[in-house]
Image (cartoon, rainbow, N blue to C red; front, side):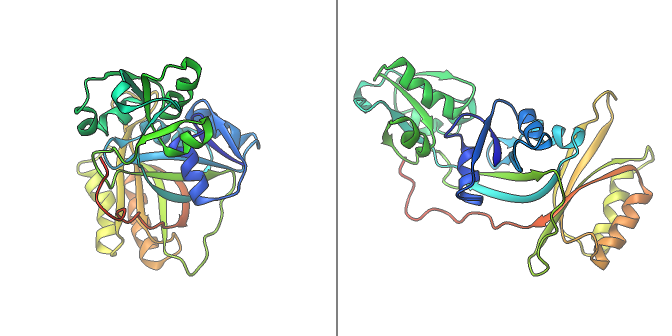
Length: 281
């Protein structure tokens, strides 16, 4: 069972289907509900979006990684392809209003500017699609995944309406227990650390990675809950904790930090290739 945030048809569900096809799925109301479902044993894996190439960081996911005890066991990159969905009897020339998550609307701005439609922001893209069925108004449309059309019996009025054809979301897979990645696969390691209160502490923390040739792929600062103006840092790097170069880098990191939380070592996923042909928007 894989837990994900959102209604059926959410892009998180699409990520689950791509990464682990055929698995049972558990929709959850919030990101924290995903963590709780995995911790309570209702799901073996949670699928969490952590960053979008256009919208940036999903801060809730990073904050929950700090406060819960789950392990990162994988990653997945999803190419986000927005579609314009309507009821079976809907037509473009009869549309009056469009519904979606604020980011869904923002990521299709160029397409939507062609039409004088009223835009409504809602809680998620899949929910916008599901609500079309409840309202039953053919003048309403939604920006959502094509998967929603299959799930809710909607018609695809236009495919690939996103502004950026390489709009991509990175997901992390979390589980209760660590899973050792196969020896023959390139890996990433993720950890969380808080620096000591000394001059140039962050620079010194990262220096060991540079001198030992360890490639950093992600560095993100987040406030520490309950400690105003204090921050910890999420770090992703290529390699395994038992690699000689990584061990030397981590030894230097420990010297300049107050705490380090190991989040997981997992196979590195390939980023998606551009879709064939020109964008249809």
